[in-house]
Length: 403
Image 1: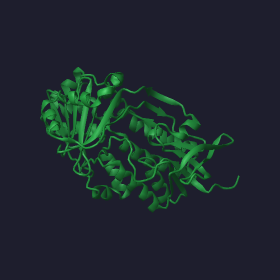
Image 2: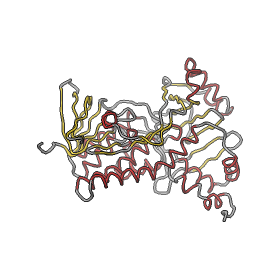
Image 3: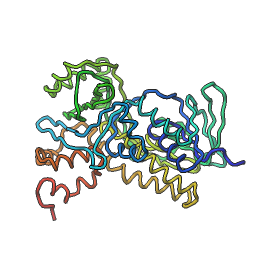
Image 4: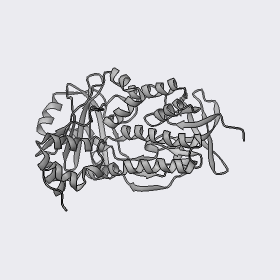
């Protein structure tokens, strides 16, 4: 077979695929990025870019463009448990803010950055088949925006096309840590609901959050156990308004506001997939997915893209064998993501906090240093492994660590 035209083909051009393609092109690799969507366009999303994700945008030189859309910085998170509220700063001195831009704006910035880096981008491209040669993935076949059949070859094909990935379906990777959908969530945009805070509310069987976004609007997202999906499907808005009554002060605020968009809902499975094999790799939601409740999706996608770009660089440069380089990608991914994944599953049960958590929240409420530390856990800055270490908990609550 003749040498392929591209080093890498990336299928899917949103929060994982566009940054990956951009980073590869900046390293000098011939990169094709395809997506069935055209840009700008919207997609279902929890919107929030936690400070680690904002830090990635800063490294890429794109944070100023996101800020220029008018998306306000968020320098404070609060979690209202009912009896107690914990509020603190989510970031670090180097990356103090979170952002929640509309995806119609964010994704266009990412795709344009890929183009500027030298990526060949084909919008409105539908991948119909993943091509194999001797058991290895070697390209894609599909149709361009005009409906013409197109075939392209590459050294590596990456699925960045979400949990229903065409690439993942073709290569059938092994799954692990699988869990079915746990919650169902709905969101919309509201006017006259001002806030400068990512506000989260936790009640038994219910959870919701709000965050400022573009155009002086506030994102409002909330949900309940997946087992109740059918029960409430016919009156989503009524169920959500009844949920807000569990926090009377918030209920008063939202009843004075105006919903400016339709309610959009989703539920997702939870899984890890083996993210590489002969001639292929998976990134973002195509490789692993978690419940929306911790809003880690965009941040995960950004960090996953950087991680995979590093591994593919090692493999394509020949500085490490392909399997070794990509195994490093999987190991780094799982080491970082698995603790947050397990924490997310625990939160997504929507069960009342256990006695240990009640004691912790009670001990740190009002102690700003401790509340900041708790907030950095929820923003993804601090790993649960580090936060829940006995020495750290002992320090936060002012007690010596157990021997």
